[in-house]
Image (cartoon, rainbow, N blue to C red; front, side, top):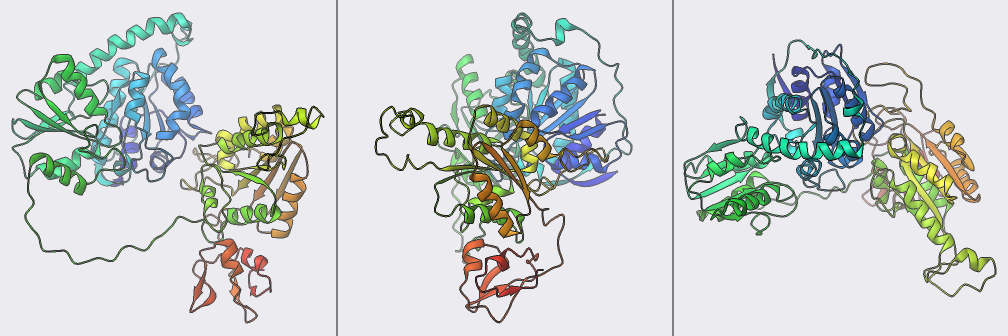
Length: 622
């Protein structure tokens, strides 16, 4: 039956049609909907899970693939970093069943820390990569990816980008789900137990095999050529192929070479298509990967061909391509002069919409409580990846650093150790305190700061645990603030080990964050409702007065999953001091004709503004 689905849905349906037996992943935009789509369709006999992180997902799937099952692993491009440890070894060990690792790249970036290119990772790991250009192709290509994985007994990377993941198309969804039949795990320590001798032997096998895969890819159905034989050609891949195709439909005299399998590079195919070509424009997103492969090919075979693209400045080095940008690039390349057009009607610019925490978000109250408790003190506020990264926005201004998932906990330790043990001039503060000399004047080093780590409940399970263990073991003096809103909010409210349910639809034992922290041996663990400002501020002061590793669990549900019908209202006693707006930054608060106003359509009645108001002029939330 025909289904109109998102690109991620097409990938999910393609995997179901391929008979996938296990699907594991960690939510991350733009990949999250793959697992969620599988959950919505009949899939009896398929194990489905949101794993605690990408590394865990890949390792669970690896065991299934060792057994001959077809395994799907989903993540975004930065998640591939987390999964890289097992992936690099798995490339050497190989698999029995098909194993497809979906790494969704995010040109822009739209919702990521980096613009890293998973094609680079595929080459680094020495495993094949498939690069779909549309949801329809993604549906077909992921089925091919399982076939190639089984044929060559290797994991493969499947690399959709945001516009493919979030585009929509109609695909032929399977009427019934038929899982692949497999024999199960056959013990073979000589193959599945990785040792240096095995790795050395298999490295040679991988290099020889990749030559064969490259030849196989030279006849792959999605490596195509369009247009007439000409001296000028365009080489493209991924979504950029669609942009180039749209423009070149009016220029059939130009050869258009499309690469769907960037690694191993299909050399024979490209060599054949370059006959008679003197110039090539490479149109691709993120890194100049295809461009570099073409340059290597030209050097290897002594081709007299000029190659243009990112390395020559003809294609932007960063960000997304688009139909308009591709048109401009290709017009310049082909020397097409656009006819003069009437000046378009001036369109006013779109209003600025900076990202902010939702109205009523408990994270705002958590940040505000810490800010009030630490007024006038030297502090380090280490953020993390999630909704709470938005705590950096004014007027909160409560995120000094944000690097990657879990780094807030460990970076807070670095600030603490440097601040408490080492002066800027490199002398040991501990030794000086013990009487061996006196501290030299420095820029506030003698005034020890308080280091805070902010991390969400889902991120705590994904990548925060090891950092907390490290803090206790290495005697850090930090306060870990766990912003527990009972969901994985930023990526679409997926469950996690603390929610008590999983993707198989089972009610499970909730993993207790306080119990974990107490077992690790923290100095103090406090749970408080951040929307009770007085108690929240007191909890912060209590914990920061103690030495060692302390944790405050700010526990209040995300307003998107538990929305209150209560509303705050401005009373006649308002003196229009605007403190509620200046200090909280809640989007439900604004000025209307110069007076403070609460937008009832946004307000959730959290009551933070009422507690901030110095004249008790806000009511209605109790």
